[in-house]
Length: 115
Length: 110
Image 1: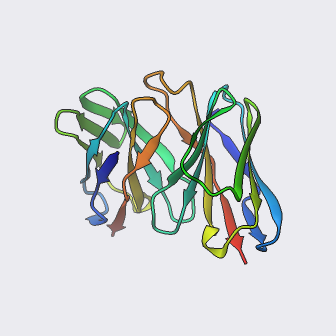
Image 2: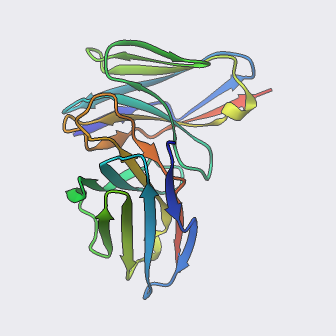
C-alpha cells in the first residue's frame, strides 16, 4: 500500500475564511511534506515534518499553518488567504529521510481556489 | 542551493523511444527521482537513483552520473498514455528536501 490520502480534493474559500487541508498515510512513514504547485510549474516545498516535528519551513507566510497531530496525519490550516494562493497543494510522505533508497510518495492533491 | 535543468517540451511518436535529460548543480545530493505527472493529477513515482548507473523498470529506465551531475529517463515503446510531464527531482544531503526541475512536457503522437 503506497497511498497518501488528501481531503478535500477541491476547496473554494473566501479571503476571510478559515479552512483546513488534511493528509493521511498508513505506511509507517515518519516524514511528511506539504508542497504547493501552480499551473505548469513544478511543486515547491512548503513544510517538512520529521517524527511529528516541524523540521523545515520554507519561508511560508503565516496564513499557512501546518500541524502534525500524529505520525499518520498532517494538516494545513488556512486563514486569510489571497487569490494568488490558489494552487494545487500536495502532501507527501517518506520513510526516515536519511535512509538511502526511501521513496517520497505524493497524494492526489487538494485544488484550492481563493475568491 | 539547487539548480535543476530539463527541457521544457519534447515530442515523440507512438512506439518510439525517447530520452529526457536532467542536469543538476546542487550543494548536496542524496538521490535523484523521476516522477510522471498527468495534467490535473499528482506526481507519480517512476524511479530513483542514488548510485551511478542504470535502473530499469519495464518500459522505463533511469540513468545517473553523479560526477557529471546528469541523469536521463528513457521511455521505450511509447504509448499515447505516456503524454505527461516528467519531473526530475534531487534530494538534499539531509534527506528532507526534494527540489524539482521545471518538468518536461512530453507529447506522444500517433
